[in-house]
Amino acid sequence: MARENRQRLRKKFVYFFLNGKVHKVLKLSRARDEVIAWSYLDKKRMMYSYSQVEKNMEKAYSVVEVSKILGRHRVTIEEYILQGKIKQPQKVYPISNPDSTWSKYMLSESDILDIHQFIIDAGHIRELPSRSELQAILKHNLILYTKTEDGKFVPVWKAE
Image (cartoon, rainbow, N blue to C red; front, top):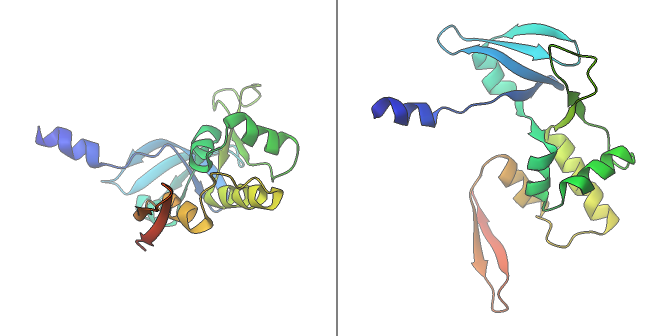
């Protein structure tokens, strides 16, 4: 029972950004303070200190996760990328077959903020979180809302 509770509390990450490059965790050892990860841009295995990765990494988000955060459909986000309206994010591919035609986009927090700004500039702001709400969502901060007389929820306070 206690072991199950401890295992649930561990934060599990598979993809992450470090120094602007997307990586996939291959092996992780907190006891030895090491992370062995595949660097997609360098196309090689890298070994990092676990504590440094925890401190300096940015979470990598898939297009599906970004679409849920921004309240837009997955296809809409992909169209923005394919039409060149936003900067093309980094792709991940099967490590065993780098020449495979399968790949998926992984976006950093700065990529998400760029997409958010593009949506605002394009005028499609309906049901879009504000920039401060988006940053709080990405940092897993607490946002409190109050319900107005017309039934809408507005942010009142957010934790830093």
